[in-house]
Length: 184
Image 1 (cartoon, rainbow, N blue to C red):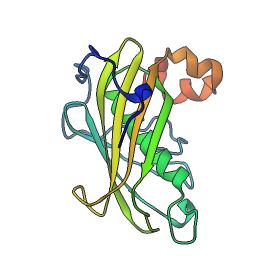
Image 2 (cartoon, rainbow, N blue to C red):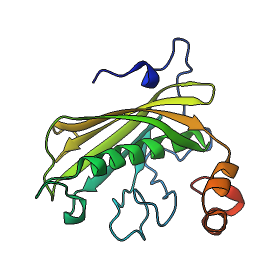
Image 3 (cartoon, one colour):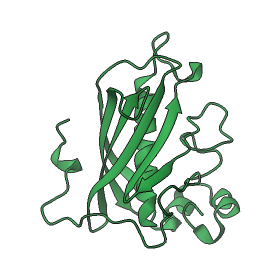
């Protein structure tokens, strides 16, 4: 994948390290929100990603493509695959214990993904510069070392939790994230 300059860390960017209070290796990460399309357990047609961290600044998850996720008959919709990449990247950035939002997502589709396929997702941070975090992800078919079906590179921006209250549903945030904590 050739990344644009917008998703490539600038020279001198900090090398990412998980926050001291990040979950230890082997931990399962919580969802962003119960109705989140990517990781929410209560979303009826969502991806239902459950991510964990093997260590460092990397996050892994699995996603099985269901009938509700298809575009062409029997194949995953490209937008759903991009959503899975955005979600796993968004979960990896949580290891830094700061709220971020997607500013840019570049997605390369390398092979079709049939309905019923389990994608093994992995995301990691390649650098941080000021409020900008640079990240990458991949989705492999059938096994963690299976063929790569989709790759992504992203630029995320650090925001305050007030961003979500101002532009989203403040009551829902308060109900699920006491004191606006990110992924408690």
